[in-house]
Image (tube, rainbow, N blue to C red; front, side):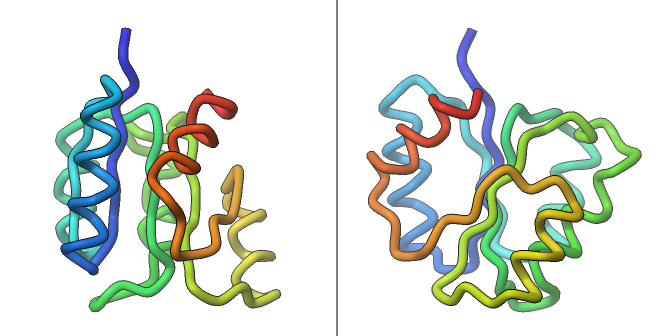
Length: 119
């Protein structure tokens, strides 16, 4: 059975690059470009992994993850991506159970290796 991953990333080009690479490696993906769009998808579908950018146009990615604690995706594994690694952000991510922090830009093959390691 293949993994199902939600990628939350407002940079459309980078998001497409990641999802296409994951799809080509037998990983099912869905993508969202905002926190609001991600919430709609998360309410309707279950995922094995949620990969979110920290900085989104309408809210930060950790706020999205806070909202899944009691929903159908409460057992999804989570990864946080950001260009900058700030102590407050990393601390908050750990409190929310985020498994790993990924410094952007990340190469799609490196993300695939990380997903395989964490599944």
